[in-house]
Image 1 (cartoon, rainbow, N blue to C red):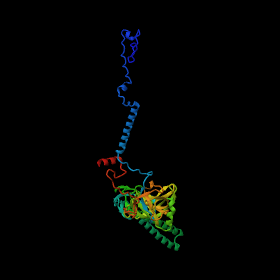
Image 2 (cartoon, helix red, strand yellow):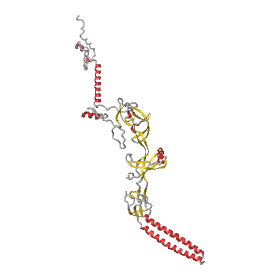
Image 3 (cartoon, rainbow, N blue to C red):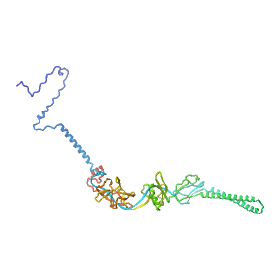
Image 4 (cartoon, one colour):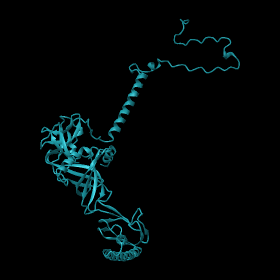
Length: 477
């Protein structure tokens, strides 16, 4: 029995062979690695009822799950920390009736107005120039002054023309004396010829001399009249009534008839006209009314089209159409008592051509255009909408005439129609017939506003408020 090997004893190391490194002088052996622990050692040390440890793969999956949970919690915290989001709005909003504003179809009168761009043009604009040469010795007007026709404006030195007039009058007197003498000789020769005392030729010669002297006297008289006219031109008066512009020349200067600028420009302001254009397609409508004897009212507005400047009447239509623009020119006159219209001023002209009486009127905001054509959304009694095609007539910047498709009293959608479809359920926010401020013309505005809803603690008053503003409001509360 003693010769049998012990199974628990370690096997003996094999004998070193000759020539190993340990036997070689000068060579050190590296330390041997530690012996690996026995895998069955924990099982021997752990009790018989202990559970086995989890595998390493299960521990890795568990770690990934914990990281995912932490990330999801972080995302939820970032989402909900900004507070409630604004409700979804727009064309593709779903759920619940759509809030809309409505207006009723009303009966009324609609003026047919044509608009055109125009320029204020004076009926008379005169550049006052001198008609003789001379020194300007006096200016009797003030710049910007209103003058009447015939008012004294300026004076040119008349002395040279007074001297010329005296000279012409002296020549006239001399030639008149020669004429008188020749006429006396002619009468004497007639007597002598009757007595047969002189030849007939002498009488004929004297008669021709008398006619020559009479021509000379007439020429002298024309010279006298010319000098008198020059003296009249020395006193310059206003040729038309209007407003005096800036003075172009100062007293003391020598003015000539060849001066291009003249002395001053006078522009007639009362009355004044405006030339505007209309498309050629509108010409038959206007011409028919004019040829029928109607007086069409023209209203001038400022550049923005908001301030009314003056009210006048259509005066005339041009005799041809401009082929480059396809428009025709028209002239309207205005009394302009307050001088609100100024020459070369840009204006918007509205020409009242006709008035449609007792028409069905709706706000412009109710008109929709799409695949069916021109239509409106009509609100039914069950608070649903239906797309109703309509035929439109003339209109203005607020209302338009419905020639066909609607009846008075029906309600049409004016606000929120871009989010509707045929048969959609709606909620009337505020009726156009409710108490609202009226416009100066007595019409109610087409736009409607939603009344503010009651707010709860922690809820923003405005659902469209930005998230950062909602967060500040919640922090303050």
